[in-house]
Length: 363
Image (cartoon, rainbow, N blue to C red; front, side, top):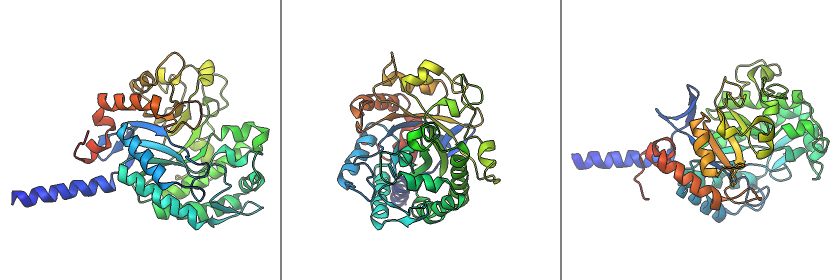
């Protein structure tokens, strides 16, 4: 009898490890089941620009996710499309009709890999790069965001199929609707799209995600300037509930948490974010705040190990170093890995997915 019970418990543990538990927001923190989880994270934005439906290398992603897990990283941020040139079917007027079979097939494997290695994925659906005049399709994306009907075509023909395929996966913990929309608003090279048009997309997409899944929703903001009503030289929180519901009057038109990015140029204006509480940094207080990007080489005068520990002690709900795979000069796992391992070892019960899910330890 005891042997049967032990086998049943082992089977339950194995199933729970494979399926995971969904990350939710409760009392201003991230939770997995009845346990708090702190996002000891990274960015793995791309291996080959526009991977999914492009030059997706399954073996590379498999090895990278294994490395993330080995370094104590429990979540990573992946760019699902980098500039919209590959994967999504968009016409000249900006209407969306779906995605290529290769795009879906590659994403199927990505989420299988995430489950295999027990690393949560923040899916960044698009970036300011979609609107940059440095690629041929930028006008299509500018036309897309100019009309509510085009945004609805994206929701109907891309976002809802995305949720139907991956929304039940607990390893898809959140969706970042756009990487750094601040630059779409500010830069002529990105079309200078008004905030009202960006907000219309955020509101329509968030409503659909909340109606059809339990996946959390955020927007990766480049700076405090457009994410705060009170900060120095700030223009107001352009992703607040009030701002989004001015576009779509629906309770689902909201973010679940705030994601701001931090680099040293931000610090010259607002101070070093990991060394302040979100409230002192002047982030809005109505939702949890996450550092969605910060340099893997560390902020000015500090090591990345110090940055993660300080962010935790100051009340940020996670930190995601840029990047795990060295896409630019901001560092890779060579710098970031020792920091995330050290944080895991100090705070295992808060970050170690294996512990949370009851997986036998192999370290």
